[in-house]
Every structure is written in structure tokens, then in C-alpha cells.
Amino acid sequence: MSQDRDGIDLETSMGYLVKEVSSALRSAMEDVLRPFGMNITHYSCLELLAQRPGLSNSELARGTFVTRQSMNVLLQTLERDGEVTRASTPAAGKALPTELTARGRERLAAATAAVRGVELRMLAGLDDTDRLTTFRALRRMARSLRQPRAVGDEPAPDPASYPPSLS
Image 1: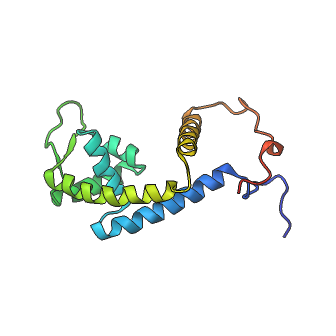
Image 2 (image 1 turned 180 degrees about the vertical axis):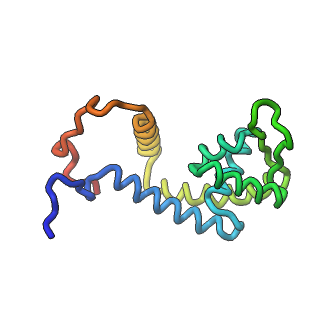
């Protein structure tokens, strides 16, 4: 089968590389979280609540990249296990604010050290300048993709402008 010349060149595709890094990061994080009885969504939920107490189910779902239904199931489990508390009635509107318990904070602290180790391993080959440049570039990429655009607003970049090899 011949390759279509207009297709994506996986050797120089930024999107493919970001997906590869994302997949490797997810796998490494799942490996270190497993001994704590957590997965990435569980850990991310606790981390978000530690940094932003009182988030609703919908806000937590958006912050952990899962559906509201999946987050609701997780929150029921975390509440049953004593890691979070949720108000029985909403303070305003329909949202039930969620907060970490002491048990949730303890579990988070142990898991955070393991996750931090994964991130340090991921960044080990980068100096401070590379880290800052990469951070800023990834943040701009995410921002660009979140901005709605009409079809035809921007022409597609010329593939000839990509570097011949990014390795």
C-alpha cells in the first residue's frame, strides 16, 4: 500500500508527538498511582480539591477531563471512603460543593510525591530554559486549540515549513 503524500508525517507531526508524550506520561502515572489504589482521575480530583476547595461535580469533571456522570460515580466512591465530603444541599443553584477530608489530604500527599517523581523523570533531559520554553509553547498550543475559529479563518501551515526531523 502506498502512502498518501498529503497525509501526516508522523516523524514531524507535533500533534502525534504530544499524543506520544501524553500516553507515556499517563502510563507512568498510572504505574506509580496503582500502589495507592488510585488512577489518574482519582488523583487529579483530589489535587484539584486541595488547590480549589468547594468545586462542583461539573467543575471537577472538566478539570479531570471526564464526563459529569463518571465524576459523580467517583465522588460517590470518594465520599463513601471518607476522602471527600459534599454538602447535602447546595449553597446556591444546584451544585454541591466538594471538599477534601483529612483522610483525602493524607492520601493525596503520599500520591503527590510519586507523581512528582514521574514529572521530574519526564523533565530530566531538559535544562531550565528548555523547560520554560516547552511550558510556554504547550500553554499557547492549548489556548489556541480552545479558541473557536470559523472554517477557513487560517490557512493550514505549509508542511514544508516543518523541520525535516525533530529528533
